[in-house]
Image: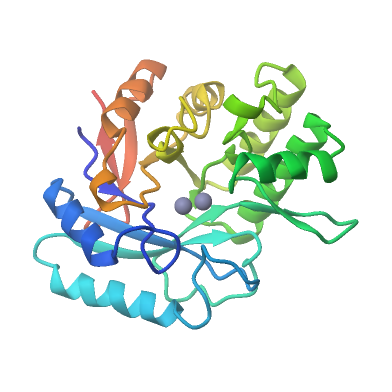
Length: 277
Ligand SMILES: [Zn+2]
Ligand SMILES: [Zn+2]
């Protein structure tokens, strides 16, 4: 394993299983030089997976405490996974970097909020109720929100670019080989590439058994590679012992696709290059 850093980490401050300190100790154990915390931003509606206005300062203070406490062993960076629903509504000034992510959809006609990644039942319900079982409308809505978020907020990292495929191996809502779907995804990719935001190669859903390939999927990764566009590997870690799971496989996959290097969070510069060859 060449990558010694993870930019996408959740703890008990949002929906992670481990404490922030357990994450730090696991990262040190795995020989990491840098660890980035990226709690889910407060989305201002009642839920049990995001930071809240009550605990956001505890999150920031705890990460800062750990930064100091472990500074001789690891560089800890304070980040945030900024949800579309939080954009423009919360203070982003404490954070060293942002991961921009879409997790939910608000139906403009009914105002009902749906989730792309909670469970297959909720995804099926959204597909039926909000999109009349039309996969193309579903894909257009998702990617248009992703593009909007990234172009407006300009985060450092694009979170799980094609999250709408999370339960697709089970639900078969989208045919990933459908040229209409592929064009929608590719157009969104190209639009975001104009911003310079780094695409994360997120292996979290592989580790949790939902997907066999990372986000973004292979054709999208090939396109990024063709343009020598930078990517950063993340485990979207919610459980400390799994902090580097699938990193070896991700490196191998990216090498096979043709990437010669990836980015990672670094102790000196926020992003540093890791050669894969
Ligand atoms: Zn996410
Ligand atoms: Zn996440």
